[in-house]
Length: 498
Ligand code: AHR
View (cartoon, rainbow, N blue to C red):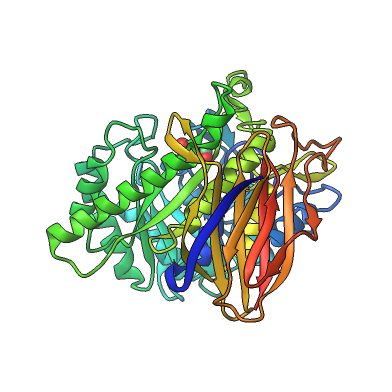
């Protein structure tokens, strides 16, 4: 059997996992909100229209933050449309996605939902068609206790206590020519700085994410980051990264190596942040909010057929297969291995729209990518240890790719080690080994495996368990040496107790 040997040291940490890297994203887009999290009258919906079947799947994921309300949508959004009596809220066109937004579900409904979902909001402001004044008003509406126009309006609309929203995005993908109110780096950098300054005057406790590049191959990367940070360094806390991968070429080996590119992208953004830090002789470091990441391409042909100005149509409804599960697993491993600088990340999105959860009027089910997200979020909390793995590589369009991607998380409170490992080999199982002698008395925990021979198999409403985890009893620890078989084409979670 081929071998992968991991070397690590319990005293050498990459960093503490910030739980916010297991965040997600709810955009007013397609059926993410409507028919996704919210569907009044649906058989599981509560009195507020929140679907309990979907809520259960979300709560199981332990999603710590949810970015809202967009996305491209936010760049034309008037947040005032989404508060107050529902019957008075306007129906608006959304030119980002060429649909109608009814505003039936708005800010208060979202904040109530976050409580039910055990999560926290990550709110985006519109820096496309709007600016400083509206962003300031929104922070006042959400976070000022009372005694001013907007804070009193919030109370009048039913929320006596402030929402205390801590994390804010300064617009969305402002580098992208597709964005409403698209800007140059100079225009956006100045606007982000001035908007951020004003927002922090209203509430100094908030944290701000400035827009980085929309994807790594956009021509303005990384001069965009450099200019934006140069102009907004004092007020900005995080720079965003967005990246989606596809397998349009139907080359699974290349596709599974996409996280090599994600790793390179993260390293280059860190270098750019640190370049600006050096230039400014600043003590402050800018960290990363990777607030949109996923596989996205399956739905592209379908989306071209949607009539203009539809009301929450089936948009971006990618049906994920088994190879997507493997790449999402590898992307999570890459994020964890950068836990020193990646402090926030959002799997885009949460329900129906390029999402781990799908719904029909009757049921809700787990897409394949639900599983790596579930296990990383629930078992990947603690300290990521520096690790290097000796393993064969293969050539890919993203350079040499290891057959095994892995990371190791030590949780000192629970006294556990959790290893996440993906075996990308098409045919060969690989024996994964590591020296565990630093952990006296360590014993095997569980081995959760997701394996399938068919890369293209997907979970559907009719067959929701086509891909599901197996629970194995095949971890051995002998003489302080870990050995566990990683099946070809598999995502693995290996836990140990010490
Ligand atoms: O997540 C879907 C879209 O992808 C978002 O609206 C946008 O920010 C990105 O281009």
